[in-house]
Length: 369
Ligand SMILES: [Zn+2]
Image 1 (spheres, rainbow, N blue to C red):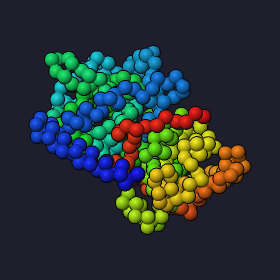
Image 2 (image 1 turned 90 degrees about the vertical axis):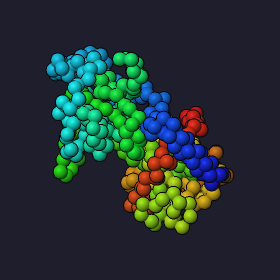
Image 3 (image 1 turned 135 degrees about the vertical axis):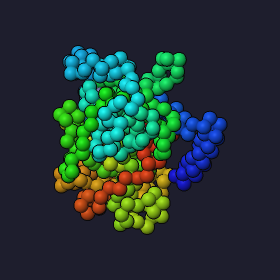
């Protein structure tokens, strides 16, 4: 089934590429498609009614209350307030961050959420700081802006609603996008020569813990884990094989020993490792040896790679308990359990495997608890 899906994926990618070339030739705007695809995910991630909302890079993006925003706004100069609170634009070539070439992050001037990285900054020649992608896709909120007789897309900070600038479809590869910023909406945090980023208190990611699960094709496993409350990020990758930094093709040859694995970064204050184990055994069949449904091969094996001794103990204990249950009394659980120390590190899969179901449809709801 998977090779067929892959062939379809290849065909649709080729068709999409042809469509992009056609569209670009017709309109002369290589970023148009990219701009269209960001609009559907344009709403803030959540309301925060079930607790704090975290972005995939583990920053708290729960929208701030209006009185907190008003409190933060007291530090702004009248000129900054005009831009940040009233959709103003600073004159071109006047901002203090236009020619900043230092390494670091650009955080929200109002609430300090990281918004852009120096890795994605480029010289657009427009007179405003320009980036081809945000620091984290969930940190930017997009709004249709029809003011001044133009159709544009305004960008604002997801957490506090600060006006940042606009995004256009004439940026460089790989996104074709140009995020056009007001320097006044940003503050720069320079990367430390060594050690972690010196984030200010209001912009520090939460400490997450990682767990590693192989349950067949990683597209579906990643999609399911990403939906579980308390999971901050689920990433598709490879683990348990001999080769460093393997490609999908390497793993599909069945000679490297890797399994398709999902790294689950979770907030241990909101979900325990044991609860993740419960979900893992609910979303795949642990009795199938070296396959999962129509996907056959050791790369689709059921596997748990334990990050430490506690995870190792809990995983083995959970499987022993499950084996005794009515559901598995007559069927042997064949899940491989190995420590990360023995199995070797997790290698992130290629970009086109990440968020596959979200981008292509076919997402499945979680089974009942
Ligand atoms: Zn903000």
